[in-house]
Image 1: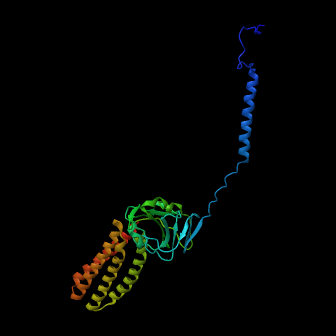
Image 2: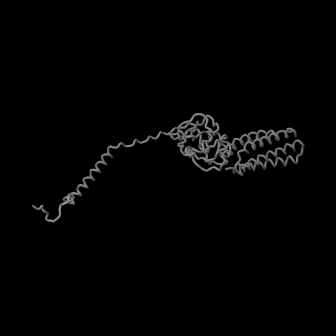
Image 3: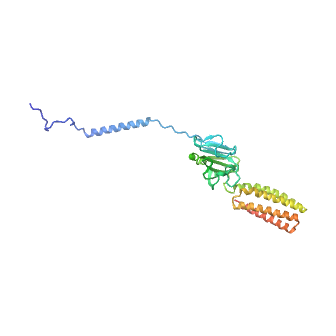
Length: 314
């Protein structure tokens, strides 16, 4: 008996399964995609939200009549900061990035020269200053410079009637990035019984000019009255010498703070007045009336020139 045959005349292969309809395949793919999306959405909904990092509150820095704010992340540092001289009781030091060698030193200290920097920090004022602000106060910022011990330092000063608000950023050269720009992070300066001043090369000179001239004016009025009343050549010479010394002391007090042509002119005229009084003393002692008269006229010319020079100082 012969084996049955298929109508096609060939044996059916085990791989020849019936074809699935196209709509069935598309539906299955859609179901798989929906399941995947549902699983992703479930994981997203149940994943924990990262906790927000709290920013530490600003830290108040009290410097006598001046207070300001430093970032709360700055860590206070006790003891002397390497490379920074002692700035007195009104100073505080911080580590802007705890764990690194960078330091920020903030202080209120007197200033009395054209740099506006406290005397212990004048070595850091070696470059021409740039206008800036320090905790909202008008300030001068000096450029970065290398200091002893392989460190870099940068100085910013804001003059006030109570002294210079000062910020020193200092760090080893390898970790300078941890201290650079520390002055820019200080904010909200508050002054009690003091006022901010506009930085100027003549500021220290002008602040000293008024009291120096006040003292000179009082001394000059006294001695001139006595000179006019003197009846002997010796008495006139003695009083003229004292007037010469008074003008010389005024010139000496102002000379270290000169920073412009106008300020130097004031000192030059005071020295000229000293010389004129010296000639007056000599003429009085020798009994030379003509020279005495000329010296007295020179004194008057210098007095007028001083008034004009002082008025021009800005």
